[in-house]
Length: 231
Length: 229
Image (cartoon, rainbow over all chains, first blue to last red; front, side):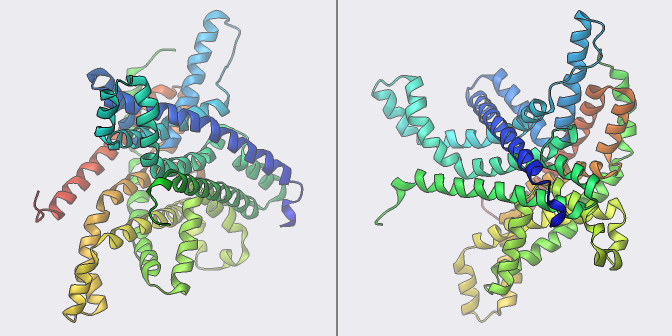
């Protein structure tokens, strides 16, 4: 354990980066998931095909491949665009933080698309009909009736998607993001103790996934309060 | 920057040179992982605390950490431990291939054991009770009544895990193995054409995913052929 002395603050800041990536990609995941499920449920053929292509491609290929394609692809595209305006520019990339967050947001968003679609379909159609009979607008029906009913249904799978997100953040070290895996690599270079360093990273991730699991359990309890009988 | 279709045509055969390694990693760790999962699942449902507590801790740890971290602990970390270097394990852990197999097996075992447990718990209790009333022993009940039904129940979730294992094999490219992903990364670093190479690889992986889904769908249909549709 003494080899960890002096590295604690690096691991702390690495964990902060993990949390930041997690939060950004969580927002993106929800966004892509909602857009994808809306497109799938819209009944519009073009939108449906696009959303289908999205889920098939991103659920069928390894996360690391999406990440590398996104990072290196965006880098050469941006460089080409920049060189068009200023030929002296050598190389531009999207910062690994953003490239990584967007890539894992896209991947897990494709899983969330299916979850949200199922949850929206699980909302009792009678409630929607009742809202329509009461003359409530489509938008208000969505906000006040569909969403409150669907998030409870989506929550268990959504919890798993959040766990995938936090675990996928480890991959972003491959494109040079300075999070815990990166810290462990550097610390290994100095101390020559990879076992301790990577075990520390494992412990950090285990703590994060435990927090997420407990939070989801809490939300599930809150969401199903009205279903508890006779307590 | 322009999209080079000819490069796709020339790179696909190069990428496919790594498919053998991808298949080896995939199938070997799927089989070993399934055996591990069965053992863990039996420990989990045994009802004896000294069996189910270790199984639960194992599952918790391996499902709660990224597989990349597990691969790195095994590949970079374990050789640092003296008694592992002196044990029989060293012949496996010396090679990145052995480390890859070990990491993928340990990881998938944890996930699959939970799937199998779900299947076993999904079998109606009445069947077991009826068998018990007929005097069928506990072991025979499990093999002839619970297991065949549990396999059918867990098959859809299992097929997802087999696919996610296939996707995880791409991560061994980080420990110097030249599977399809590893080859793709080398070609990209030489040609600097990420779109062409990575999209070709995506197509290969999509075909693998699609084929796996179809095979499992056929298997499911065959296993459920007696059920009334």
